[in-house]
Image 1 (tube, rainbow, N blue to C red):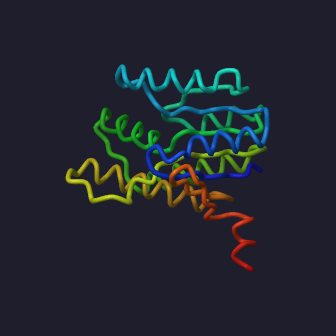
Image 2 (cartoon, rainbow, N blue to C red):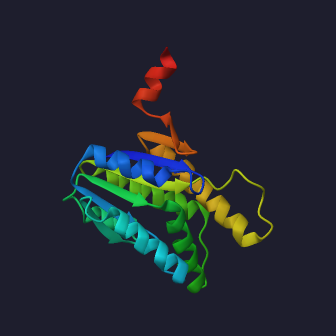
Length: 188
């Protein structure tokens, strides 16, 4: 049964670096699951930079825009899986649904996260999910941005419920919100 860790924070907060460090500390048998798709030349350069940064550090890399549960079911051969990030995964689900003339609801996201949690519990090792905390600012002015914010918020709540440990990273400083060492601290 895999341990599930959720790492959240704002854009450029240091959450991905923290998650990668945590994964490296846990095992040399690691898989990096990138959910980002190439949408423009700037994003392509960004993705390539991230690939170079992980190169030679023992990471296997898979790109997965939609079927995270399926990918996790097929990778029992690694001890640690790092999924970066759920926020882009939500974006991908919304885009695919829009292309099909459908929509993504909070209920659908809840079901997806429950499925992900179930798949994680059936595998060995650790699965680390990275996500963005998007609901700390003003209410977006357009409907699509509000729907996106709400879906990511629901995703984060549900994944935090599934997770054994939850960390919030702010200014590259991680704070443990949920987990064994946090519970021990709270008892003192």
